[in-house]
Image (cartoon, rainbow, N blue to C red):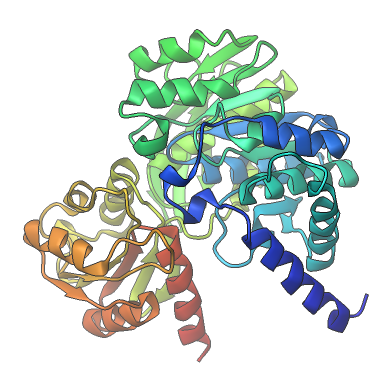
Length: 445
């Protein structure tokens, strides 16, 4: 197919996709009662491709994307062909659906979406944007005859479109307060929603260590379970050049001195969940050299990602209190920023979506970390006004400036920080995506 033919077809089918209700871009009150009936009807018309291979479902408030990438690398190192479905994306929507780490190309994405478009006329209820992409992912994985699918839950679990598949392994990274307007006001409510991915045939890998919440997951009666702290975990995560050296234990083995090229102590916990999930999938330990090979090549764009050196520019898509606190801890531990490194001027670019708690999130900065906050407005219908973020920063005693456009906010922060300073961009993956694009363009220019 010629590119000249593909471009208009892609534009047309993406416009059709974007005409569907998108929870990522709309307020929760636009959605009715949650259910899986639409996605079941859609995949049913497609021959139920979600049943074509074993599926690992990964849910959790934070760490799903990192865990999915690490698990994908582990499966590939074991010789499996792997389909991975993740969200959201930083650049093109293709990033969400990948085969052995490579995103689906435009031609295949267009063909699958066009086929789904033709089927939707037969449906009684119009599917959502995410349901269509989920069906496309399962269809592509079936067409590619992957050995396993690593699937990141979009939100919650029980009613998420990804849950149309029965998980052979169900992974829960952690449970914190997020999406409370949809999932419930308490961590217990959120845990019950996430436990919905567990079936009687699922092996549970539970990364959440709160005993009160663990009871909720056990009540889902998985076929077996592995729990962090009891059965597996990360016993050490030492700062190393370019990442961490981690020691991980599982029921089957101990993996010591594994280099993980990701920043942040929390990534050790994500790696432990991924290794435990791989062992649950195979029913055995994985050789140390296989684990070393797999983890050494892992990248997670937009998660404590370095995209510039003069000044040091770090991006992290943390958008809730727990995630932001983990990112800020990494600034101090991995990069010696904050109190121990006050000679380096740190300027933060922060933008958020509505429904977030800017005061609670920005409290993660503590004292003496940043010289100032540049507040911006993400490119999203759900964007929180930059002025609201700036006001929250000032209530925390921080100097704050409003620069509406995220790319311009980054340029402003770079100028403020100076070549010997640091810029930290966070609060929303929408902001990170725009910042990433502008910083890469700056480095190329």
